[in-house]
Length: 149
Image 1 (tube, rainbow, N blue to C red):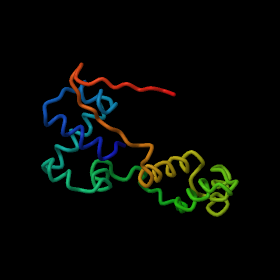
Image 2 (cartoon, one colour):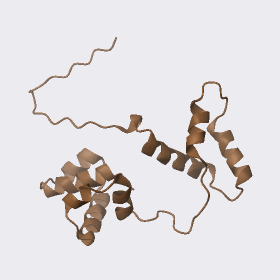
Image 3 (tube, rainbow, N blue to C red):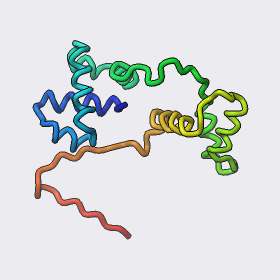
């Protein structure tokens, strides 16, 4: 499942006649992912400008329907978990929080899926680590110098 910015970026690059190789290099996705996004967009029959006005969650749900059909397992309150994990006085770790979740919901998600949904929640609510900046430049125009002290 790709994020909405990746989906829009791929479609915009193809609208500007970029090649598969250029799109792969920019977004680090494979041919099958690119083809899948293009096919799904062609079926939708809406213009790209209209798609860009929609919210990220709506765009992702348009391209990727329910990833786990039939699974209606309860999820914990991730904001509370985040607070516990980032509190300096708390000695909680994710594994013990998950064990508490499993005591309350014995049929709930296993540890790996629990971590997956927590990471998904963190990506949606705390984006500091997920930011990217595209720098378009001509060779030799600007030199970036990084000095490590």
